Length: 102
Image (cartoon, rainbow, N blue to C red; front, side, top):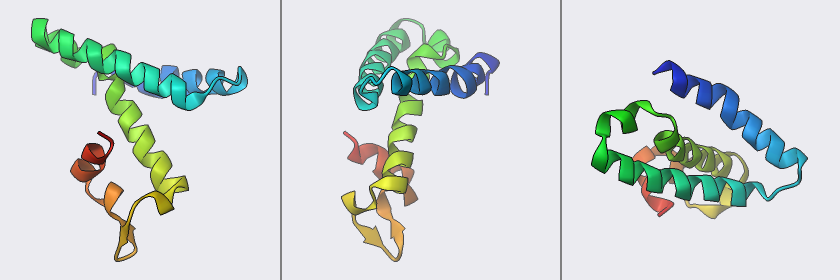
């Protein structure tokens, strides 16, 4: 993993969530806004410069947010999705989990 992206994952993202929590912003609204902006920027960036889109953390922020949503639902909202054999289908198969958010 590229160093700038690691810095985003391990430093900026948790600080952003902590700041939104302390200032009493709606964390879901903050995450949804970042998701929309990042995903839109990703689509534009991939079209014009795919290499920069891969190495820049801004177009890849949406991936982190999707993972955060999946982790949250797996930890706190187990009743939202159907369980099969004691495991949730949403997080046992990452492809199904990602597709179910859209």
